Length: 167
Ligand SMILES: [Zn+2]
Image: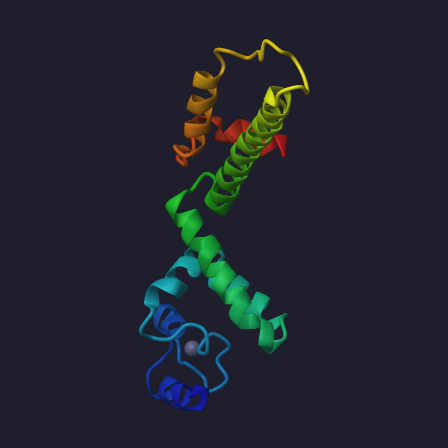
């Protein structure tokens, strides 16, 4: 399969050589990873990293790791094209914020579980308080439990810069 695509590559240049307007040699380092039918992949990494840097990075890697390196470079380059200020760091930062939010919600939910267990325990006849306290707190409990299922996954971008530099 690779063999046949390389033979095709000799006839028609890979996406990289086509963009760079050069002959696609039979041992072209780009050809296995930048097929002619996906020109946008190389256009992005060329724009962000530069063709000679991509070439150098691939040459420095063993062949079995080059596919993964190309995938991550394409991902990074596309993120940088989409978001010229933060690039893929923007995605990392917003995911970090989601983790922080979810961890806070999880801690709150765990605290509620502990609290409810204590209430349950104290309401068993003969164990504790004959008056059976906590009369009006059930309403607020159901509200905060419901908020767990209405989690807002949209990240507030105004806080991004702040959180970026704090981590
Ligand atoms: Zn080529």
